Image 1 (cartoon, helix red, strand yellow):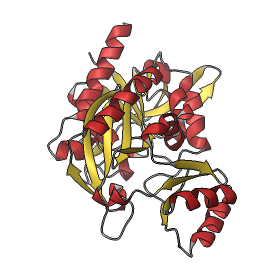
Image 2: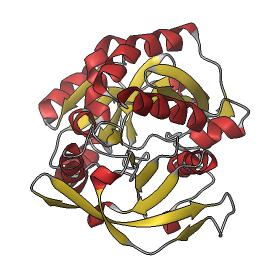
Image 3: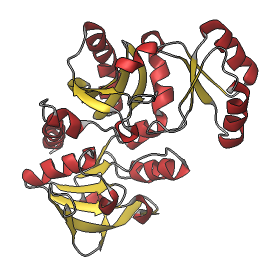
Image 4: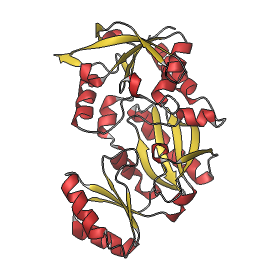
Length: 316
C-alpha cells in the first residue's frame, strides 16, 4: 500500500534530526514506500470546503547536515493526500488553532493525525484535568487570591504558562520565596490566559517520564532526568534521557487514558508522569520516538504506521 503523506511541520531545514519525532515518522514512511510531501502551516489555503497547499515532494536521510531533498512546489488539493501528519511545534496559539479549523475540512476523508478537532479541544495542560485523580493538586487561574490560598495549603508550588511548551517559563516557588510577588507580576504582564499552579513534586529530581501511547496503547517510555541545578527535565533544556520500564501505577494511568484517546482519534500521544503523578497529556507534536529507540526500546514510528495503514485499509 503506497500512501500519499503530507507532513505539516516547521521547515525541515530547521529541525534537529537527533530527537525529532516527525523526522522519525518520515523515515519510516519512506522505508515503507509511501510518497512524502513537506509543507509549513502558512501555505494552507481554504476556499469554501476545499483546502489547497503548495506541497514539496521530499526525500529524507538520517544524515546530519544532509537530511533532506525537496522537490518543486506544486499546488495540491489536500483531499488528494491519504494522510496528513500535523507535526509543527507549539506554541498552541491562534495560528495553531486556525490550522486545525482548516484541516477539519479534509478529515477524516484525508486522515489527519492527530484529529484536528480533538487537538484543538484538548490543550495539553487542560485536557489532563479530566483525570484529576491521577494528578498532583493543580490550580488553573491567574487570580492572586486563589494562588495565595493554594500556596498556603501546599507550600512549594510550580507556576507555568497554560500554553507554554518545552519547559519555557516553568518556575518553582518555595513557601518562603521572596520572588513570588515579582514572578506573579511578570506572569500577569506576560500571559493573558490563566496559568497552571501545581504542587511541587520533589522526586522530579529522579526524572519526568515521557510515556508514548499509540492508538491508546502503551508503546514506549523514556525517563528524562533534569540537569544539575535545573527544575526542568525537557531534553531541549538539558534533561538526560534514560531507558525506563513502566511501574504498576504508570500502567494504571495508561489503561485509564487509553479509551479516551482512541475515542478522540488521538493516535500519537505523549504523557508526562512524575513520581506516579500525571502532569500533562501532549497531543500537538509529542516527542520521544527517537530517544526511546536509541535507548534500545521499541520502534514507535513503526507502530504508528502499522496503525495508520490498518485504519486506511479498513476504510477502502
